Length: 455
Image 1 (tube, helix red, strand yellow):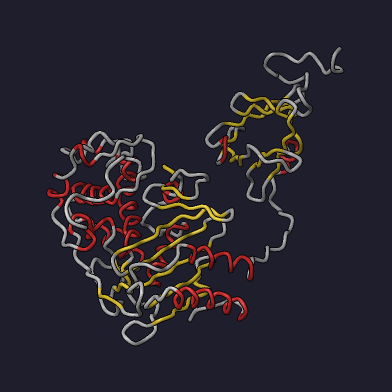
Image 2 (spheres, rainbow, N blue to C red):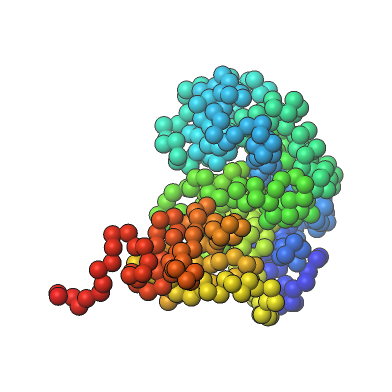
């Protein structure tokens, strides 16, 4: 057990894990939490081959495999070998999916069928890539809008073959060379390597189990075949959080975490980025993936804003509730919240920026501009109201570029009067002034002056 938490917190987490394993009759279950790149708690319940699971015990991780395929595709993009707007036909011709973009397939909005034609692919030996591609005819395309979320396992089989064609080697060999070896993930494999858990189904009405098959899925393997351990999944969580080594630039991983499609409902809670599953929970924006294969369930969820992650792995076909991961994160937040670092004044603040700070008005709406400790500018609505807000980085020529929110990528220019004093902000044509509709600033349409209502 690795832990740096209070005994009371450990007990709360262990009880949640124990309730999950006992009440849902899970043969074995291991779970843990990361904070700031370190595993701060991990524990297991049940047994694998007569002993508790360890952080080196392999489980099948199912669709978490898709996140690795996503990284392989993004590496090709970053190298200029493809663009996300490229149509599939440009690289892998001959299917009814050919007019869909690589980005659409990667973000689960291509309209491609969820499962391949033929037998239940998760429980039967898989065929070749040519056989899979031959089944993608007009009947495999669903009549959904092109921008609508529609989860497709087949799409990641296609992406695996795309990687293989462009790299000249099977996708899993490319993954081994480009991802697993650089990150030191030596226990993540295409087939099981001891010590590993056996995939089991638990009878719904009796305390007996049934062994599940673990076939080679062939061309569908990129959709969910990998086996891994808690330790390797912890390293993968750190990767998704931005500790990417030389595998991918952190900005590219951040791009992968941006929603490309959402599972629309009364209030959207889940969606898909570029090879990463996304969920929202209690104000958190989590990125990672869940995984399910016969006999196994797993999840890896990361919270980049808090630099935290949760992982669980189990050898059961069904039974582990989706709330386990988020419940563990909630327990950590409730029982062991972060203690903020002490505030200290910075010695390296650009004093020339002080004249930009304070209240600015977009029309009659007050905004506040602050200088952040990292030298960025922060603009948001004043008086605690919620609305458009962005941070801005300096460009070195007196202009600033928005980093997030509504103004991401937009240019902020500082307007000055004849004496050089800032008197307005030009934010992509929106004019903010020191007082509401200040007459000395270039407000489009002119400013006639304030007057009593009715006059």
